[in-house]
Length: 557
Image (cartoon, rainbow, N blue to C red):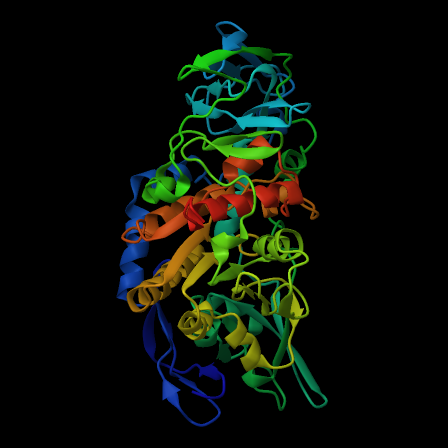
């Protein structure tokens, strides 16, 4: 199928799934060679999977808390961390391995107690001198009080930190805007000879039609691999094939915010509930051994039932000496190149996953003879072969939408973002292929229905791959935590709470494949370490890669 297709609209009714069923008037898709076909839609399987998601009680419960479109009008009525309080239940001197409960009571800006729940709290223990960090669990009693539970995981001192990172009102605003945002700030640039044009793009064809003010759309869905994508057809002597760049901004995303919402979204500095609570953790004999840190199991991660990783019920680990120690299984603490001998590692994702690729290449495999093909920019196809271990690492930027970029050859670009095509060629030349997928940084403003449709299509790709190939292991890197972003109003535009919703969507939609996909959940480690930037530090990235290696390799490698 050569040539990119465009949609010409006349009077014909076609029903399409975009998170809801809608019927629009269309005629056909036609490419430059006269080929016609009906507008592509998500098939019935995708429809039924999204219906399952919408009927899932846990998913509905998460969204229901923030479902109201009612805007706040008095920021002083929101939870005020400075006026709130936390109290310890019991003693502050505990033994290694014991659990300690605290009660957090939230007050508003007028100093009056809150009687509703829904605010997003985070808690952790830390000792910077020891490089020791762990996170706590939060139980919302829906009456303005919360139970914070932590476990004593190292001997010595441990300072408690509890904060109200997102007020209920801030999350309500963020969710409301995601339901109503129209993607109207994403543009494609077309050029050919002396002709240029710019048109609106997005995953919803009706919105693109509305903003492009045209009767034809370029349909890039087939080439975009697992995500529907449309752009207004360019004018003049230009065709869809002349697409050369994409750009975006979020200027109109927050246009519907009032003064109260603006004020609450800017509360970045005063999120901590003031307390001077310090635990003194005493040595304890565990399995007949006096230890300085708590280790729950000696079972290796390679032997762990990895389906359980989708359903964690308590923190998965903690930092000590700035090294992440998993509680449910014993992982690698250092890099072992033999682990990846005769293997191909394929990373498909955004720039935060690209950090894994570069850490492997520039840190763990530094100094080892290699042949590399490096594209310009993180979203370009990149590949390195390391002769010592006969291993290959490949990075592919995920499909559109991603950050702004330019391209010389449209078809080469689309080919370079298809992990299915790369797997088809690579799996014939390697003993084992490890595929790591990650979608997060560039899709945080998605409507949840669009993200669900995207994941549903990825699931179909993985089903095909796993059915045809026996030498492949699939990993999903779940969204990590962070607490700031370069853009203004990051708590609305790029908050990390969306990652919790994305995680639940994936957990629901990947039903049937949970035993075939190894999930890498690193929210715990990034919350415990109080990771600041969406791009974690090298210290954190190192532990992320070692966690991946712990599940990818057997303990005798």
